[in-house]
Image (spheres, one colour):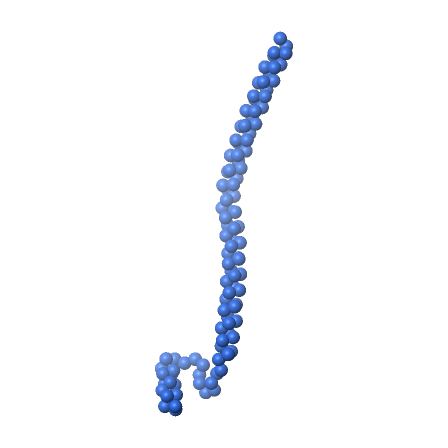
Length: 103
């Protein structure tokens, strides 16, 4: 009779162990999910900050290339002596008339 009691106890013990193991796994899953949900805004903020830095560096490189090409174009255009570099519409109109008369 003694071996039957031990068999019954061991089966109860193993059932309790399996039940506790399953319950622990479920609780651990819930805790991990809650932690992830709480940390999700911080993760998203970090990712967006990284993307913003990367975009800013790309924009900076593009704008420096554009500026360099514009400066190159400006330096290739010869300046005519005696003519202002910045003119209003009326000044440019008058200068065009003078150029036509001179030709």
